[in-house]
Figure 1 (cartoon, rainbow, N blue to C red):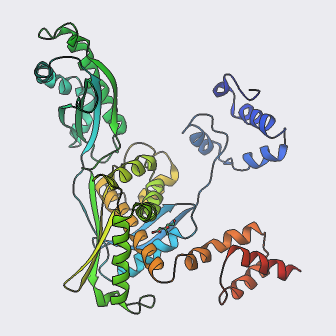
Figure 2 (cartoon, rainbow, N blue to C red; figure 1 turned 90 degrees about the vertical axis):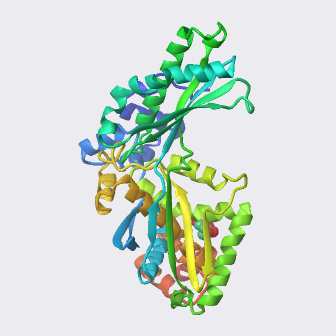
Figure 3 (cartoon, rainbow, N blue to C red; figure 1 turned 180 degrees about the horizontal axis):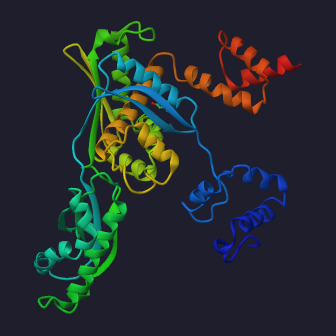
Length: 438
Ligand code: MEV
């Protein structure tokens, strides 16, 4: 209880930091020094970052790497990736290079519809509710005009507002199910503002609707919020080539490779324990580009995994087949993304990432990110079904181990030479460094 605090958000950044250090670190000045060492010396830049959220005390670094050679619909991209896991960028680059020599990735946006709901409780006659919604329907559009004006100029807006009866699942529960086109913005604020106006229409109009009984007039809005489940905001990414063209240094026998690869995908299709990890590998690529481009990775994660379970059982997002000697590997992903608004022009590194991608539209970014996911999945399955994942993974993780051990340049060199011919594990590296040191 001694750690409870009042008015914390009103303290200055320095005061907040002092409180943290005194309360949790016995006033240890080295903690304060470590935290402030992450402050940017450019005060304006630091202020910008401080103001992204509340109670900022410092910055938290993640590396921004780049994966070149992504050929997508015949255009070459270098992908910006923000991620902490050592092997992800290397795996993406490897898959990109590999497929660049085999026609590259193809991607298509299949739909771009975003969704939001007003959830409400209505106790009364269903027919009269339908009549009421039909009567006020035009108000959903007219009363949101001030919000939709600019979006309409950009070709977007409200697509439809429908009444949904959910009373068979929850007593007296109905929804307004609204669909939107938000063009190049992710559109969360736009959608939520529209939904809150729809809710206001219900609240104001229901008590005035003459055909309603007294109880029906007490229609109660529970909440109005967008949905991060966007099964109709869908992009497809795929690769294909003749089975024999898969041959490479790492794939000496493409027929055998394809057989195992497809088997691995089929396992993920039927076995949720495997599907979750399989899809996690896809999200390694997806999240890294989502983060770099300032999009909401929690929204993407939630929506993608719901989509993976849409038929009642969690399954693989990707699929593979061979038909007439052609290997095909593909995936559909629901991705609600933005390339304008939000952090896109505010965060200098997000701005850089979007410029590196040559200022994509939201549709282009959907394709790029789906490809990043498919590439990552291809790289993971290729390793898993050939050498195993640890070989590449530990090679990339070696730097972290050496940094933990504070290895000198000479020690690093000796470690590298030694593990070219020996099995690389964390304990083997520790033992070897200890041996050199003694
Ligand atoms: C590790 O981050 C991702 C993998 O586990 C994915 C997979 O198993 O497919 C390698």
